[in-house]
Image 1 (spheres, rainbow, N blue to C red):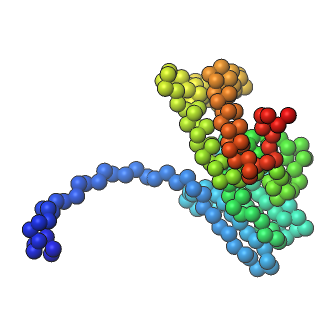
Image 2 (tube, helix red, strand yellow):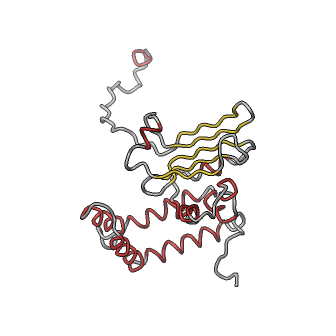
Length: 229
């Protein structure tokens, strides 16, 4: 109505048609946290998806693997870690009689097992009997740092871009190796590792990691850095 009585206002124009948006990509996990009867602390972190029965998900060939310590209602607190076929944490399930750091465990979502101190190998060798203790040791504190996600994004951007020679990034090489044959053989892995070293990406990643530790050393004094010896 204001436009009818105020001639100084600009003429009304229809807003332009918005383009048809594609289905959004959800990257933040779904979280459930509750205090259950019997004073059990329950915590569940999983990727956003259509609810499906666990038996159906586990029957898929690309489901991955599940590692468990403790047992529900037993003497040891229960934790279940589901790693997808890329060996990254996809589901975290905790059931404990005492409180635990949900904020820290939430940081594990999407983390590759190599960043967790080779968790898969250590678990298979019997070196890990309690995930609660293992995931609160000093070596993992960098993963729980609030700037660690930014470091991961920075390193990923470093590995997928090459302004000098477009089409020669490690991501491009990985796609070529995977497209040539089904799967990813040991020979492909060695070729990719050689390229990782030859292109200087390895040195650049190490430099950024050391800079991250040095800049946040007030919170990360448990790590060694150049100049300490």
